[in-house]
Length: 144
Image (cartoon, rainbow, N blue to C red; front, side):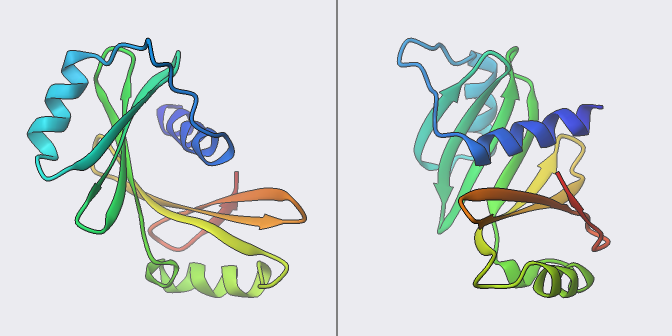
């Protein structure tokens, strides 16, 4: 259930624009975690909702988002990744079933949860609609 909630948060992040409140307060616990674990972070911006806090920043050339619950506890992180770095079996499915130009790749991210488990999310646009797919490290593909 927890992984499903996190996946839903990521889908919401894909599907919506930033809804940060200028009056929102970031938990000191989340800020301390970010400073301790991402000291090289540049251009940090925060988004706060009723359910989570998100820090967005860059480290080197990578875009990273770190998610915290409302108490400032780490939920997980995402970073952009190259499409061709997905598991080989997933690439075979994706390049066969979601072909360009009908499906336009919009995002490819790696999600790491608090227990350091990884999963991937890929989104495509088709006919003004977004399709979000979950890809396991084993290469299975499922629509969200």
